[in-house]
Image (cartoon, rainbow over all chains, first blue to last red; front, side):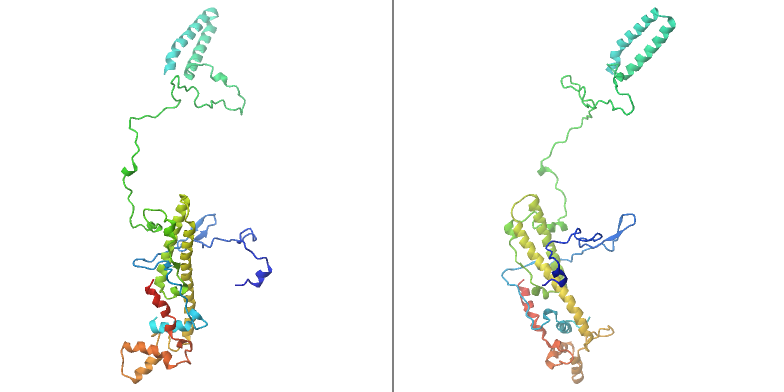
Amino acid sequence: MQLTRALLGMRYRKLRLTTKDVNKGFYKGTGSGAMGRHTKYGGYKIEWSRVRTYVCPSLEGFKLTPFVTNNMRPTYGVYNDANGPRNPANYLSRWKSENGLD
Amino acid sequence: MASSAAMGPAMGSMLLQSCRAAHGVSARRAAAAAAAAAAVSLRQQQRAGLSTTAAMLKRHKYPGARDNRDHNKHRGESAIRRTGTRWRLSMSDEPLPKPVERSQLPRIETDENHGLWDFFYDRQTVAQAPEEDAKHGRGWSVEELRHKSWDDLHRLWWVCVKERNRIATAAWERNKSKLGFGDAESKTRDSQVRLTMRGIRHVLTERQYVWEDAVKLAETDPEVNLLGDGAAYTPSEYLESEEVEVEVPAAEEVPAAEEVPASGEAASEPAATVPEPETIPSGKAPESTR
């Protein structure tokens, strides 16, 4: 990976950007989206349609673990194509042979 | 109160004095003085028990003067004289509760199947030993995850989330209780879980992009109908063979689809001639080992 031209001319930052490095009005955030709106009185109204709800699927009988045994070396795909695993023609032909309905 | 009984003789002597003084001076003055003295003595009797000059001791009378309050909450208390406290002590005949042995306490009812139990490896221990923590394999490679279905990836993601919860809980407990070593093992374990999660995200993103490209490709494909007004897929080979032969049930469909690359329809689908088995079986074989 290479930095863009604009960045190469500038000093290279190794520190994370903080709100003190930029002009005022900059909102860095925490990566978490808003779950409501500010009211004009200074309060905050939660909109439940925006509140995230995570549903864990049923894990009954599910035997996979986050780990693979160390006895097996990690496998890598062999693709003769330049597109590699991102070949849409392969996807389409597989869809035709396996599904072809929807 | 004891003060009223003690003041009885004192008040009587003061009244006597005032009566004696009345004989010396004129009668009018004496009567007024006697009335005033009686009133003063009554007031003093109500105000204080022993000292009658308490109110006169207030030195600062100007506005804004500091208060003359007694700041000693324990003034007059004495263990030798056994005065007790200046405030009332509440007392009751109820027996004091005695501490109970922990083993004799009633067992707290908890839900055995509560989801929060998933935050621990074991119900008896808060954190695994570092040796146990180090017993883990490697994370999944992306290629291994490519051959998993959406449902499998979805569930594997949540398995990873629960594993990370357990690791974080153990790390927190280790830090809180100062259990000692184990941080390095926990971090390597966590990094492998995150490797798997990264692979899942990678595969799903890749799958989405390939799907988008495949939809574009399908628009130019004469065999595929994306309008939704009929069958989505009409294999051209199958239709030709149907005209020649008699009606064949669905068993014919599978070999017909496989014959597409062999028959050499390179003009319409150049890329589709790549045989699918090249990519798929490499991952399908190790599934049984996991």
